[in-house]
Structure formats: C-alpha cells, structure tokens
Length: 353
Image (tube, rainbow, N blue to C red; front, side, top):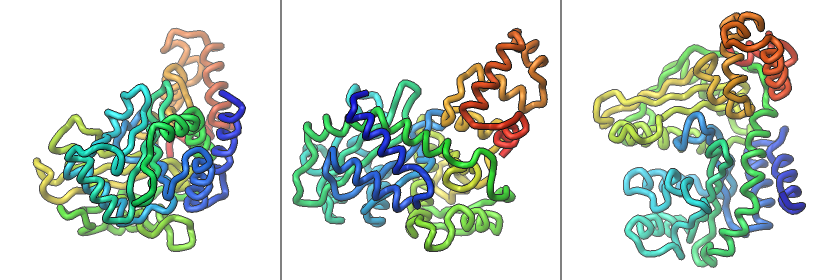
C-alpha cells in the first residue's frame, strides 16, 4: 500500500467510526472519495461473503434522491441492469459506468432515462472485494450535463479499493460485541405485489421502531420504505430464479445494537402474491457465518467456537477435533483478540445474540 493509499485508509476508518450518524458518515466518505473522483452523490452498500451479493447488510448515502433510488431498484429488477453486481465482481477491474457515456444498449438506454428523469447523467460503480469475497458496492453519481465517468475515473477510484473492505469491517467490529438492546419476538411484515407494506405485526412494529427510530437519529426517513421495496423485489426474483441470491440479511450490531436477521419469502409458488418478511434476533448458527466473516475468524477458529457454544470445554474440543489442547487454546486466544471478548462467557453471549 502506498503512502497515499495508507492516508486514504486512515481517513475512511475515521469516517466510519463512532459516534457519527449515518448521514454524517455518508457526507464524510463522499468528501474523501471526491478528492479522487469528483461526483454529486454517493452510496456505499455493504455486503458480506457469507450472505452473497444480494441485499446490503447496511448502507450510507449522500445526496441521492430517494425517488431515484427506488426507480433504480425497480428498473434493475423489472428490466435488467446493464451492470449486474455478480458479473461486475468477476471482472479483473470491477468498475463500470451506467447512463451517459456507457453505450446505447437497451438496458443502458432504459437506465439513462431513469437517471435523466431525476436530474442525473451517469453512475460509476465499484465492487468492493478482497481475497475473501465481495464486501459491498460503491456508487458515485454525476448530474445530467456533467462530464460522464470515464477511464481516468476508473483508474482513480481503484486507489480506494484496498482500503474499503478494511474500513467496512472496522465499522462492524467497532460496534458492540454483546447486544445493547433487547431481543424482541419474531415479527412479520407482509408486502403486496406493488411493493407496499400491507400489514405489520405488533412484534414487527417494535423491531422497526428499534431499528429505525424517530427523526433525529441520522437515519434518512425514506430508508425503511426503500428497504421494503428492494426486499420485495428480491424475493420475487429469487422465486422465479432460485439461482438468484437468497433474500436474507444479517445486519450487524454496529447498526442496530444487536445482530438482526431479516428473511423474505413468497406466500405463493410463483411470487405473484404477497411476500412475508420475518425479522428476528440473530444468534447461534444463524449468526455465525456473518459474524465470522466480519471478525476475520478462520474456518478452524469457527469450528472451535461452534463446540464452545455447544458447551464443550477446551479439552473436549481437542479430543473431538483430534488436536492438542494447546492448539485449541491458541485458536481461542486468536478469537478473543479479534473480537476483543474478555472471557468465554462474553464470547458465548455475543454468539447467542
């Protein structure tokens, strides 16, 4: 990493650190990125390899119009995206541009019209990835009439690429290890075929109020509505094509005070009727894949955690895995260091959710 990339990495870690609100984080990231690639709006959507390239675990936005976000989501699911995330992630240089300057293919023509209808001209997208997998997507927007993004921007945005996965992981791991808000009973929300909320159970209502509190929290007012639209569309896409990513989100405690699992499923075979969304506390086997991704826990360390969570002692785990007690204790020390857990009980409490 060059000196310049090291400085960018430090700035991004600081921008993603507490106690800033999501709106403040979005503005700070936009300012840092803008020194490399000028833009008029920014979005940073976080994923993690355990869940796949589906719905974001959390996100930060700056100056994107809510109506444009919904229009882009709808256009992508209904007409296809000229720059789909899985295909982009496979490219040697995972950067693309849609809208102005990106050609006249049918899909790009449609998205160019969507952008123009909201005063935008082009959007540059960068897949955030490292050797472990895909961690998110960075999107930059330029207004209609501005110079479209081009090759020079592609190369300049890649200066940020090494720093972004570490910054996102730093944001998650700086959050509380054990829950700071209570676990609520599982809630259910039903979403109609027009992607509006049809009904919400009292339990789900309590979850929503806990996740997206009233104005003043720094969370944009429109974020919940856009979230349900995206989830509804994703469930229906997965129903029609099981190869699509599972409509599952494991949101970190850094956002909501505890890990939360959100899972959408259709209420009919074809996905043409209502969609049910379940919201519940994430813990145990439901949490471990995402937890281990974010904290950088290895496969061997994860196996030790699984047995520890089941109540086994270090000696018992050593016998089960045919390893020495010293090796098991070394794994545990590494896990404690990575998670900053002070004891076995604290680590188990974190996994239990």
